[in-house]
Image 1 (cartoon, rainbow, N blue to C red):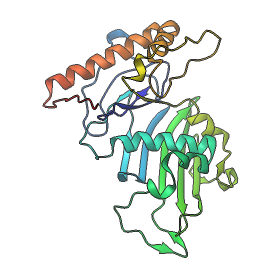
Image 2: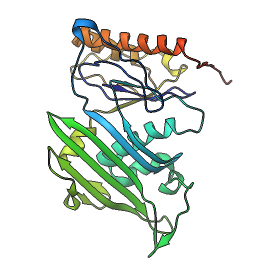
Image 3: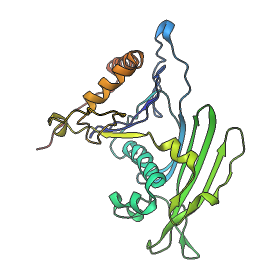
Image 4: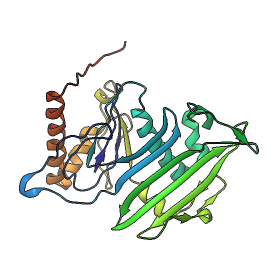
Length: 269
């Protein structure tokens, strides 16, 4: 699967599966189904849906259903970047802990959505930041729900709630997996471990990068400086998957060319 959001800075979040499959659009506008004829793929997406509350520009995203290619199109400030940034922040919380995940934002209070009136209840702020994901891993259905909150002075942040459901079980509290700002749930860590995020910086992308010559998977640099090598690695491993990515992008570009959208590109000195 390739799920990404684009805005004027071309900010992209990726999650990769072996086969990109059929294509439809993002949460704002559906694109026509794309089929590769006899090779139409029906693989399950490892990340199927996401719901976000009280993060930056998003008060309540409702359920966002992901497809092999998901594109967010909207006005500046509508929350496109917030969705991708929330996924990246969630991954950092799970893998690195709350404190480290907040460092890029200079604190919880700067990414906590303030559009809704917040109240202080027993020295705690209401309306926690909430992340809810659904997906599959090794044919097992998974659901994760995490709430992050703070005290009234924002000097302490903590997990207010963590619930999970494995396979067909009901979602239940998993407080045994949270301790001192960290999550130890191995299933959740595995679920988010291979997410990759990319910011396409045209200036840095022109800088020559040393090629990875040792064994091991090639991961995208945040700047996009190794995107050519990354795509080449996909082509080397699975030509069918690589061609699927190219055809999916062609389908989206063709659809946008026929729509009423007009794309402007600007450069700042």
